[in-house]
Image (tube, rainbow, N blue to C red; front, top):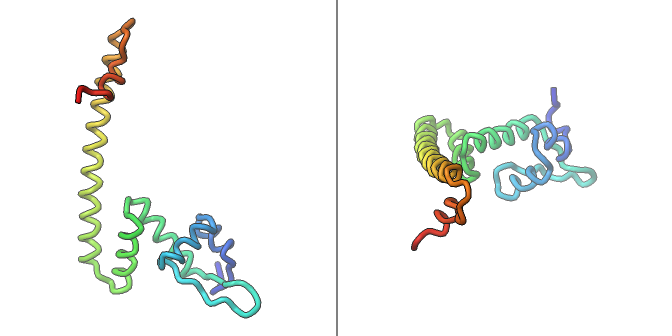
Length: 135
């Protein structure tokens, strides 16, 4: 178990599964506090800092932007489950829209590839022709 405020920034990054530059970035944008630097020595980090970084990374893995993660962090401080739920519902809707867009792209590419397969010795490529368009 990690003792309170015993980790260097490198140790924090390793424990949280990120690189040092990620930790510094989170500090610059205000998502992670920067401990005071002692007169002699380096800043020290603890379990709360690891937990904060892991929260950020998990939220990003669910598709939340850093701006949205900042909102979630702020809501976590005031324990506002309803507002957090609303943010999650908005994100869920956005993901659904992206999935629909990806399905349409997949269908279009499947059709274009099938057209290529149907043309054995053509002078033109259906994929290139579709991308050039007739605009």
